[in-house]
Amino acid sequence: MTHLEPRPNRRWPAVFVGIVVALFLVFSLGPKGFLTRSQVCQLGSSIGTYTILTPNDLANIPDGGYASITTYGWNYTMVSGGVTVGPLKPMPPFAITVSHTVPTSGILSDWADFNWTFYRTQNTTVAGAASAPCTQPFLAQVQFYGVCGGVGMVISISNNSTDASDPHTWSGNSQYNGTGVECPTLTPGAYVWFNTSFDPSDSSWGKPVDLNLCNQSGYYPLEADGQVQIPVRVVVPLGGTVISSVGYLTWSAFGYSHNQSILYDLPMGWNWLLSPVGPSSQSFDLGSGHVPAAGFERLACAA
View 1 (cartoon, helix red, strand yellow):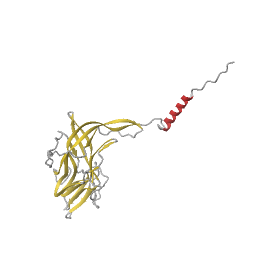
View 2 (spheres, rainbow, N blue to C red):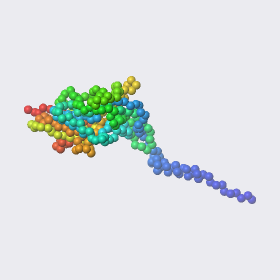
View 3 (cartoon, rainbow, N blue to C red):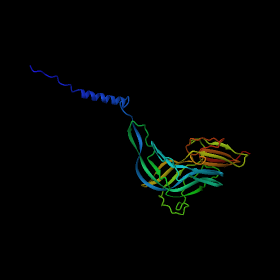
View 4 (cartoon, rainbow, N blue to C red):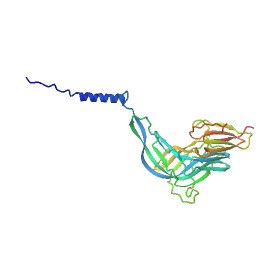
């Protein structure tokens, strides 16, 4: 009689694979068996580089008073979803202080020609990542070192008693930028929009506060410490239209002097309203003299 050997059970590899897949689904892909697939913003291709007259700093001067700016770390910060370009960098080789010492009004500023590179942003589906889709289609990144020179100046405003109607652009002649050296040709139609305006409502960055300096004489000091953020939009022409990148001109005096990124001196004898300019972790503390970057409105004292 022929002895038959038992046939080997060849199902175990399939059973083993099934167990492995089940464990992967439970322990790696979560209780639902699937990883969450989210839209995540990424920096895409470069569109081009443009030379633009660019502010290094901006600070409102209260009418008849003073403003000074100290810059130690500086950059333009642009954000789209989970992508951020432009972290603060120390100013080489030392801090730059810009000040205006003649009582006046307007916007204290410093300008130079900078190269800006524009990039597209794009959403990518990523498994297991937190959702952070693009919030703007383009991001602009500034070359940290200025292309040419710089000019400190005061931009005039239409009504000296209030920053409510501050201009949002400046197209001053930058051919020499006060350096005596001819600068590269600026890209036609490209500019930086900025917002230093006094806001009488609380719809933007916070509610205005009142500082009554009536029946007093001299100057009242206020300082904005730490990081200052001025809202900006960088605009360039592209194919018969324009594209833009929204963000902040940022700087900080931390690590230098007394950390006063902006120092204001308000003339006494008036009632002042102050509104914050741009986002800030610093709130108005008028008693100690600490404020965020501010816009001003001067009011007459009651009779």
